[in-house]
Length: 266
Image (cartoon, rainbow, N blue to C red; front, side):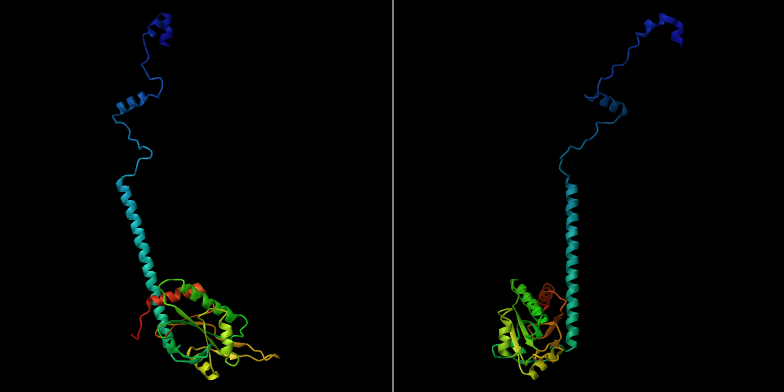
């Protein structure tokens, strides 16, 4: 308002007030440099893209990785020890139940006399059944054979002898057993005998069996316990596997028993 009151005479003086020299653009960084000069700060530090990590971070990452590996190894070792102790307790409980403590005297499918001492020094998988069984016995024997094959495929393991003992001696003589076992595995050994001999072997392993009524064709089914038995090289009963166990589970269990085995005879 003061300038307006003085009139046009004051306007030439306005030309003497020149604006300061400011940079036209920010592209050359001049404005940034002046701002840093007045703020008292040095140039801003920048991190170049692709710059390698410092040795401190690499060391921390390595320590973290080693710590994780150590924890994983300790957990696996503790788990293996826990499983070994569980297997040992199970074996002791089964031995106290006197399963498989007795001997047997049977004939193999070649007609040769066999007893439990003949298999000392070998791991044995044993199944009780009969050749006229429509489905369960073939399925269980096939599973037993799969276990033997899985163990055979792993180098360094002792061979496992598969054995099939009949609970139907009236129909399963040596010739019938020979025809039957050849369909499963070349080393599967079929054992039979008199009614008294079969009964003695079955009692030793707490195997229940009972022949059912005959039909018009004189055919019948034998009701019996379904389990696969494991004997260690000392000839002692070590474990058994019910129908619900898979071939892979049984093979894993046998490997664990092999790893933990210590002979009591030597």
